[in-house]
Length: 275
Image 1 (tube, rainbow, N blue to C red):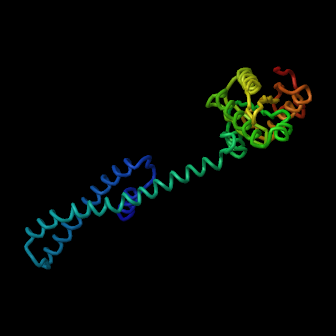
Image 2 (image 1 turned 90 degrees about the vertical axis):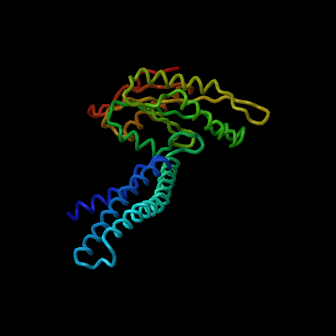
Image 3 (image 1 turned 120 degrees about the horizontal axis):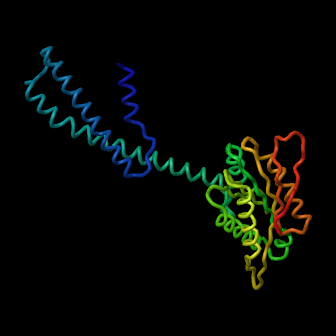
């Protein structure tokens, strides 16, 4: 019996799952009604017990009237006043924690996921997937020529372009200084490659303003397939080799690696490229 009562009390005082202040107020009223009912029942039980032992200093009828008039409203008000502030505080704490978690997993310059978030999502994905690694061409030259503010503008615009091209089923991230990555889940490899080419062309068509001059940028990319159980490191290694082939092959292109892991000791083969 004691465990049942304890479980009921814990359930009534559980503060999780509040999506808004309205939910908190609604929950506070509901809990306060039940607390008032319980308090009223205890009050009546105490009066009947005192009456049974002839310890009631006044008539039972008067006692029951007083208990009925005073106990439920007072208990209800006190329960609401106690529940609402605590509920608001826990709600605000939950919102702050969620925002902190979002910021800790977001690259502030590009607005995309950061490396940590990308690795976590990739390694948790147990579906067929693919990874595209993109690297800005001659980014050091851009920084040296137009300044770091212009370089930051490039990072931001590239992040915006990637977010617009790839759907929500893909995760876009900035995983290094001028290096970006995208991974898709449960999407045909050819479709993902086509989206990568669209992103490459959009980036090449952007115009970055710096002082009185403007310039354009290009990216090189490497795209690799992955088995559901493969982790970030092994897939990134293949995509990075494809990226290196794109760089040495003239830049502003995406090289595809069709091979996956788990095929013995065979090395990935760069079979084609998108240019």
